Image (cartoon, rainbow, N blue to C red; front, top):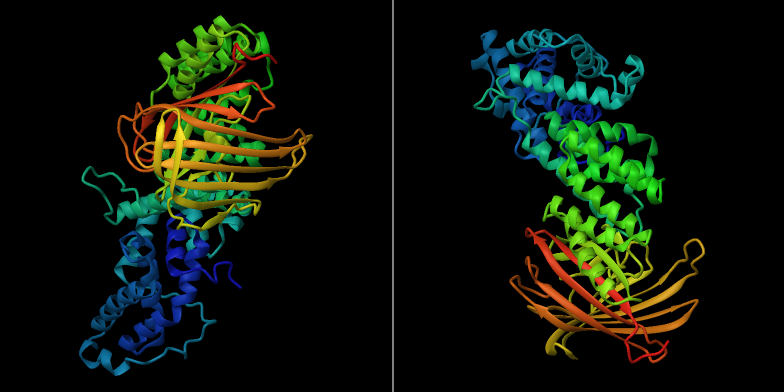
Length: 566
């Protein structure tokens, strides 16, 4: 049974556009009888019907990007075969003797399916062979093995002793050159990237990103391979390498550590500055202290400057500042993070992290004994709901947003009806819309008609950390944002309660339960249960917002009030 037997025509067309010959083979198998039948209605000749069908499938493959309704491939190729069959009939002066209505319900079931005869006389098939002669020997050989000899990508890779990705690239490049020969050009005489293929690639990448947000990543490997195959099918080499660098990062981190060399090559070829940030972090992660600082100053920064990775240079300075911080060299840390901020893009989470570090570390130096948490936090809007993405920073405690995003990274699910719940992919966390008319009093004022969400769950232990339970109640006020968060935990230290209340805010723009706009800021103070004297102040500021992605400078300061004794 074909591996694509249960796939829809739309999906098979998408896979074919990505260079998957097996998917096209399934399309041929699925629609062969109907296409042969349509041709036979016109030609009344088995061999001519076979010839017309062969020509129609080849033409459909070449012109597949013209198919706007991808779920109608059968009708598309049948329309093509009618034209070729009519040309054959005209050639034999039989056009007036055949009526299509005479064969409206006819089914073609008399062709010998074992007959491999391929007699093709039409101009388009001759022209196809002429165009193939203009291809390079390696691409031409790969095209013939796949589309004429019927070998799979895997079989071709084994026969030619090359990676499967190389086979896919040759098929894609061959198709591009063939399409160019058949007039598929833009106004500047450049091969046109298939918009359907690009959309497919981005769809696969987004699917992979969503898997990364889930508690349970079952199915991640399939999503990863699908995204990788889609990107490798792109023709624009720079764009392809840019996206490939992002995909290979996921493979290098989660599944395939042997990909790191290929990952670096894609980063350089696509000049993917964000991925270079990740690569530099991986490259120096085995070092500590002054040795790590020296490596960043003497090796990484000169290389990045030479290759014009400006964002990565700023990121290395950010890492260097963190290293100074861990070495208790706070003044050097503060000066270095200020230098990083000047080099980083304001739209990046690293810039937000630098902003939070400057603020938190300045407060720490002014308040001896205080402990800062600094992060650059990334919030992503997906289908109207808000999700928390992992981001850089020095963490001693979870920040407020990170703390209640335990249900598949969801911060605010706007799709839930009152009383409705969603359960995380791991099955251990529940997110519930509890109330829509709550009133809460905070230092910043009394807020009415708040929406209340609850996040609760039992969390399995990791390494030396035993399992623990968690319960959080979150209050959102329309046009203001998060105004209160109550937290209860029960772990090996016992039960603990906190209550974070909004103490100050400034809204520059945005709307909804979590208004996002550059310059929006919120300050919180927490109230612990009576057994604790440590206090927390939390501060958030939106440093960038583009309609789908928000970057927030997030900081929390733990301290002991002067009138308290520990």
